[in-house]
Image (cartoon, rainbow, N blue to C red; front, side, top):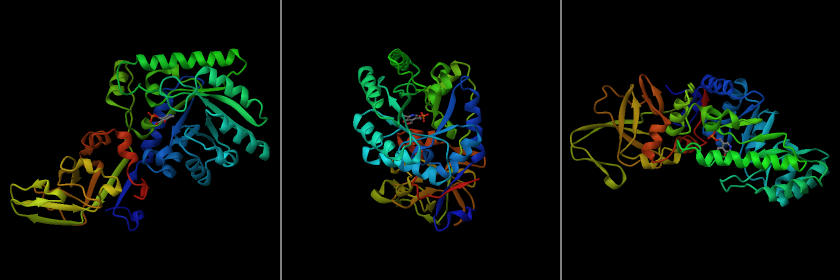
Length: 384
Ligand SMILES: Cc1ncc(COP(=O)(O)O)c(C=O)c1O
């Protein structure tokens, strides 16, 4: 049975809030003394439903939340979150007044942002705390040290603009077990912070660590770790998992999302029938198939056509034919007694079987991050 909260929808994601809290508690135990931990809840909390997730993370010990946009920040404030909130993505100058009113930390890298934030903060007589993005090798938002120094000097002209700290982001810590590029980024980040300090601009808050660094390298934790994927019980990559094992780190992460739907129709089709658009699958024996009311519009990636499995009655049912916009078909020939109205699991556990985000991602030729974030925000998220 699907929960009544799904209303007129035909699929939903059940979110295990105890698992989210457990993950945060687990990660927090590994954080270096003096550092705080932020839960990255951008992109609808990596698809888990931000309204459900942020409370579970705060309960687990997160003292910051990170989002990408002011739009996401506004949603969190509207939902009652009044703690530390860092907008890591682009805040256009025209939204400076909103940034000041929402009392967020803003990632800055351009004078046009400072002009607008300076004017808005002065008009409101409210401080705006800025975190300067330093370029260490990702080539995304960051500034080289000469540019960063120029920007912080420029910021000091505005009475309510506060230079709070510095940030950078690893480019290649999770995709490899060779961490030489990441080490170099860390070296540059430390060097730039030293130069800023020597010039009278000591950053009160330095943040470089993402999930992988949060687990692997306590020397990156500084004042704040920004953990995303691991909060949701997923590893950044197999390479990261292997690196953690090699370092003797045993981190118990629990996936929290189960995506369920219902069997819409069961039918037996004869040998030689083709299934779905493009006739890409042909039966070689009388076959019992189910029609499921979920398709690529919902975020069930079309690239898993003829590849993925769904779980029905605790068994794997292979997807047959192409995923349609709003439906897909699966083979239940070997699963007895399947009826319309039975539950089907697209992602997560049913009985002893489990389809992980990593497995579904590998069928789709992508990564767990993309897999869960692409589940349509209109698919209801239900806390369990
Ligand atoms: C700037 C920034 N910090 C932190 C994170 C969290 O990364 P992860 O999910 O690997 O922990 C992200 C994720 O994309 C990010 O863009």
